[in-house]
Amino acid sequence: MLAELLAAWISRQRWFGGKGRPIDQLSIDSDVELTPGLRHLIVAVWQDDSRDRYQLLLGERTELPDRLNHALIATIDDIYLYDAAHDPDRTGWLLEGMAHDETRSGLRMRHVPGVEIDTSPRSLVLGAEQSNTSLVYGDAYICKLFRRLIPGINPELEIITTLAARNAPHIAQPYGWIETDLDGTDTTLAFMQEFLSNANDGWDLALASVRDLYASMPEVSAAEAGGDFAAESERLGIATARVHRELAASFPTDVVESHEVKRMAEAFRRRLGRAVAEVPELRQHVGALEDAYHQVEQLTNEVFVQRVHGDYHLGQVMRTPTDWVVLDFEGEPGQPLAERRALSSPLRDVAGMLRSFDYAARHLLAGHPEAAELEPRAQEWADRNRGTFLDGYVAGGGRINRGDAALLRAFELAKAVYEVVYEARNRPTWLPIPLAAFRPR
Ligand SMILES: Nc1ncnc2c1ncn2[C@@H]1O[C@H](COP(=O)(O)OP(=O)(O)O)[C@@H](O)[C@H]1O
Ligand SMILES: O=P(O)(O)O[C@H]1O[C@H](CO)[C@@H](O[C@H]2O[C@H](CO)[C@@H](O)[C@H](O)[C@H]2O)[C@H](O)[C@H]1O
Image (cartoon, rainbow, N blue to C red; front, side, top):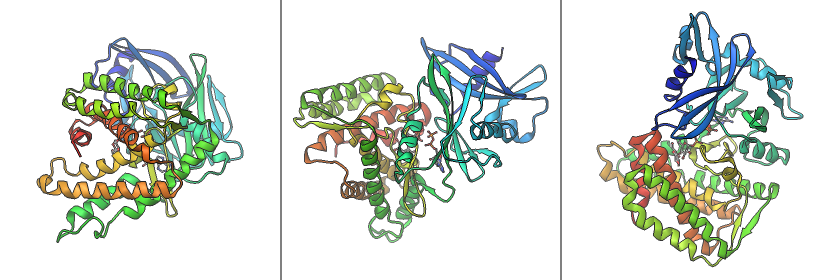
């Protein structure tokens, strides 16, 4: 009975990766009591013969305070079962566990050597629950509970702890993590780092700039607008190049010989094939995409590859009073771990951010009564910030060569294909934004 109730509940969660497909079955793989009133569950969700596993913190109470009503999952035998990630009376237990390196019922809670964890702050779930659930403790820490579990060490934990040990700039200090065995492999369940309380999300800052441009009367160019974002885009380019340099210095790198570059084009094509099957709107753009991928096959230069961010966009960077900080090095949610840890061209991240400038420029157009008149201004804002970001990247020592244009374009288009699927599944009204990327330029 609990399994059926969980299936209905999980399908409505923003972080559930299997949206758009019915759940055939949900089974409870593990269910352990962490402390009275708090259970840790790993559930397996079966859809079309594929299985994904998710973790949840299940709270139990005989009375449910109003503030937890939104987290209610079900009532069984007069016991309220709810998502305890939303209950600060329960989540303090995780902080204590990491502070004291506790192991309970197979869950290993650990802190980064040399740091101290203050166990007094209470948690709040961050409003923007996306692929995961983040708990903010006071204004000190942010602990991300990975919802969909993939056996193995999460790339974010691996990368941030490695970069922090080198005192690399542009990252937030790591504090602790929680792990368990899944299929006999150490698997990260949660990762906690410094909460940047005095910082703004790059996406929000960019949107403020776009809004300012749209509202400026009489019409001014993006460069003349009071909220011009170009200096920030440039700084972000410089920070991105620095992070790429740190990643290249900390992890293995390689060079893909020109005759092997074909494989990259094949990967783009495989992704396109899957996406077209899911989102028919893509079909009319297949020709243009094939052309772009074909140009990659014709490349005669070798391609430098290294560890990269993997899902780089304006929502993954924050502006502190001093500089940009890069978050969320876990790659594209939903991709196999091996793919997320694989070496790739840093141009992939550059392309991701270029796409994000396009998103920021266009997102306010959907449903806007003056969308047609604003379109050229959106394009102008996107072009300006994409350009200054690239300038910053090159000035910061980022590797972009003359022969990279075709590869950068292909990465951008492949990212837009990914976004089409992401939007079709999660925010269908946003679908026109990535679809606009396939228009001829
Ligand atoms: N260290 C941090 N300090 C402050 N806010 C953060 C921090 N990490 C993440 N956030 C906020 O949480 C949002 C989502 O974080 P992210 O790591 O991208 O999670 P997800 O993987 O669920 O998308 C970010 O856009 C940012 O607003
Ligand atoms: O942040 P996540 O790791 O959860 O990334 C996923 O969600 C993102 C949306 O929140 C999605 O990003 C897309 O929308 C952004 C605006 O909301 C935009 O800035 C990005 O450029 C665009 O790709 C991301 O693709 C997805 O993996």
